[in-house]
Length: 212
Image (cartoon, rainbow, N blue to C red; front, side):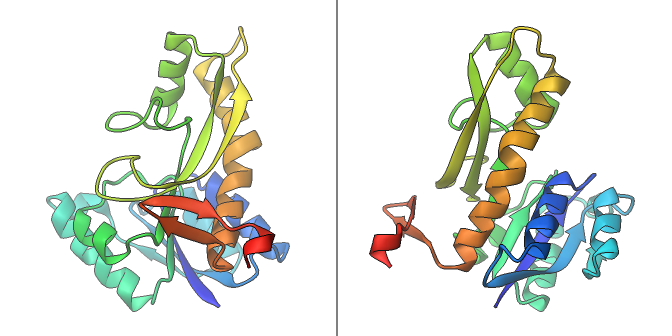
């Protein structure tokens, strides 16, 4: 049984999707063993507590830079014996000491079809604002492994939604979350826990039933 540690900073809607999936028994070989928040008032902590999941708070503002914060976080992840780390609305940049220690064991969901609208500066509503400004007709979300470069790790799953003429950033964000993020992030976690993601030449491949 793999230990899943979820990192959060805010409301925790993606965490809730993971919890709901776990409660339905759809994460076969893993369980959320700890939720770590970078903010003491994150509602995600309440979601964890409501489901009996242990929590930790490591406030980002108490550390002078990304490196010192990442060292403390790495210490906590090691203590929790994390097999998989899931970034669920975690708004803090991780230093490479974490990403290298947990290579291909950190998963993030980004609210666009990478490589579009991703990288430094593209987060939250800013992504959807950029999508609407550019006028693309399709957007979506990408679940990917985390490496040293923002939103540049191996892609695991992607899903698309249409961009409608009357969309606002908020409306589009809601559609992407409901139709893609909340479905694909738990699916990717389940695939990881069942050892169904294979890395070849720095690319992620989901194993088909025939290959097992």
